[in-house]
Length: 327
Picture 1 (cartoon, rainbow, N blue to C red):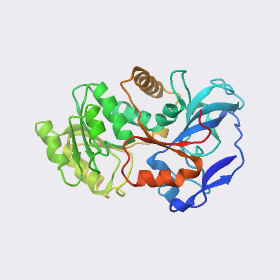
Picture 2 (cartoon, rainbow, N blue to C red):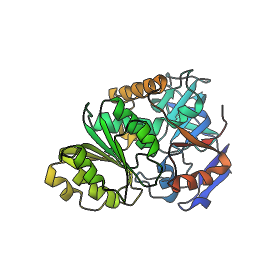
Picture 3 (cartoon, rainbow, N blue to C red):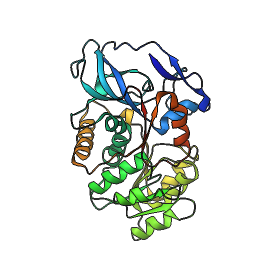
Picture 4 (tube, rainbow, N blue to C red):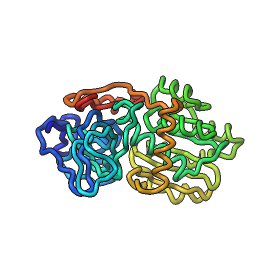
């Protein structure tokens, strides 16, 4: 089968199309003929060798796919060959004509959903839902501050938080990316680096601070973020686009008795009630039209390097997809 392979960590030149052995389902496994694969910032980190969850190289990136079940292994009862599905695989494999996914991480795709949407929502929408609800225990009327609100996870967080009755503030790093989060209901979106998000958070909350803060940037932005969060408030980290967090998290939490989580959606139990609740709410939002996963551009398999260059440009406001077999 054709696949995009990273032979060793490095730059865009490491994304090479190659012939690779087709995967076997094995016990409990499902092999999917991949229609589309969604791009996530994690794919870039995998390519660079900076992803916090270790990989062995060579590796095929791609954590989320959509397509049709090709074959199933022993013990698989949830799906059968020919079914339309989406899938999440935390060890990658999606930049390929076929991808193996454990049956617990396979999501049936209803008739009303197209394959592009099916590849665009699993990682970002479900990460957003679990940050807000499983970890953040968000309540109506609370305030949420979302860094990188104009990116994929940020846009999902905005819509899900507003739908839950919360108030949303956000920051973006590039002028012009304020438009979509404001359209989706954010109260204010600030330009990080030239506008003071701490002052804005305190102003909107009467000096108290936001209840929940979501950060994918790390480094200096995360360090300042503790000042924007109330006593007993919570900070959730899902990335380090600006660099690793400073080694002072304990000291930053102490003044307000705050709590801190570094979330990986792969740690949510796919057999548990939290996963079922999140999937049901996200699917309802997609079907009902109050949750949107805008696809900004679709790339071919041989354009994977261009796709990575696009996400690195920080000009993205939506989702990028890799088209493999289409459909």
